[in-house]
Amino acid sequence: MKTSVESPVRVEETYFEVNAVLQIDPWLSLGVFVSTAATDAVYVMFNAAVSSQRRVPAATWSSVWYLLSAFAVISYTKNWAYVGFAAAGSWIGAYLSMTLLRRPHSR
Image (cartoon, rainbow, N blue to C red; front, side, top):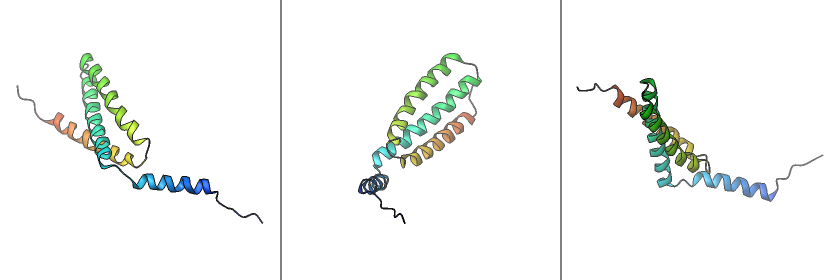
């Protein structure tokens, strides 16, 4: 009969993974939240520019979009718990930018 004994290395790895998830840096969480909110807002502006066939604004929004997304991706790939903050920031950014786009323009 074969018994399963977990190696000490695997136990330490599991402890580290669980401990890393429980230690969330509030400033980094805020940074991920704000950067993904800004990223989604810029993405909406990019799509609006593309839909309006405005090349220079579309290209500008596209470059800003990629610059902003770099911070969030680099930050939360080291700890998957930050994905929740990224998702919340993404939702808020898209919602707020759509709200701003729906306002009537004064001429």
